Image 1 (cartoon, rainbow, N blue to C red):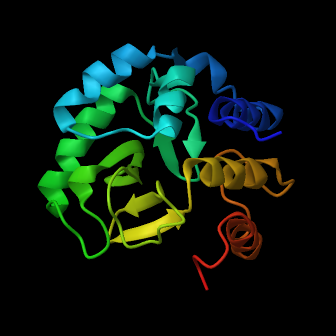
Image 2 (image 1 turned 120 degrees about the vertical axis):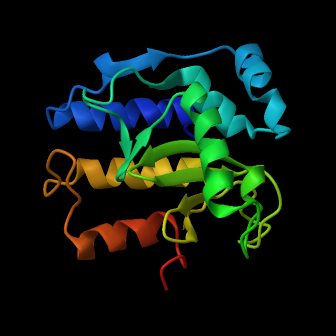
Length: 187
């Protein structure tokens, strides 16, 4: 049976908790579908079901100083922060990159001026990957084939014995796991 986005998020939270990082207490309650659609309507995006499920599960974190749920090195952000981040991204990078229209992307995580966004429109990363997760930082790069692949990758990283609080696993292990869940990205 295929795990849902919420199942994967819970599994990632448990992996953090097993390492002594109490992220659950800093997670905001989830929103209902109508709230999510209403709050994001002005962007003109059709959010994928996976993004809606993510924000139904939880709405980011309360406190930047508390333990935060991270996707590699980017913190899961609230829907409200995502709306501001969308404007920041478009303002900083412009609407278009070579591979994706950044106006048609929805941010889900950030850290120090870098964002993970989900492509909600056309992109050049392959039609078999309808909603890839893209890193917008010093460039615009495909990082995960989907939200599910991102979560599975992060679960595998955090579950490794080498992982320590908010540190990555050694690069060779990190890349092996990354390629396992997202084959061909870093060929």
